[in-house]
Image (tube, rainbow, N blue to C red):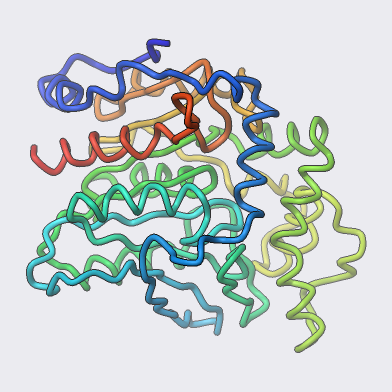
Length: 350
């Protein structure tokens, strides 16, 4: 298929797209065309044991926040001296992901091959394969907060002369979009790729809770277990009875809102409302799919028009694929790492 490209015809956008041939064509793996089949295959890939020889070595940097909570940066180890690093990729992980999720590993591998230094942020209480346990009663939140700002600042200080770009998948994509929009020209990320980010948490999460209850339960359990573990070890005055937490809405109501001391009368999901994209002041590629497993098609359609209100945003929307992934070719390789690398490499050369 020929993906749907939406952009304003500025000189910079024309230059970026000229350097991104992968964006012009997408061949969905024939046996993974159905969104549930593709997402089930992806889930299986996440559950399979990692290869005996990982693609790259990782070094975890733990950052203690003022409330005692811990966020982590997983750095891909390389042989470059810090003063010779010219390009750094900051990956914002998925809902409960870390640097070893399928998407993070594939994206990191392509960028390391191209000479980038790569680091992945792991939120508090997250990490499917390399856990980052809760060390305070505060969970992650839906919106950008001091955790994300601190991690980006730490990476920027570690490589002060390097070009710093960001890529986010799913929840991570919503966070980076919000960061770029709110920071504007003060953004320390010089370019952003947001992969499958909805516009509204309320619409996306309720859609999953109602349409895919089993998967909603899996997503909720992934972030709920660290809360249970903290409650067993330390007790908690903020977490209530966690046995009744069954959906993402329950998790926000019984864990996120009390742990962050937010107002209960406000709709839980509104604390993660995405800001107006008009504030984005750096090149931003928004990748979406009408075949998304988790984001409703109506939400995808709205998000695919963001370029109309901001000349810095380029929308890339496919008909095939699934949430967070675009299996391509007969071998099922993911198409997204190539698109991401081409776009951010082009932004680096501007």
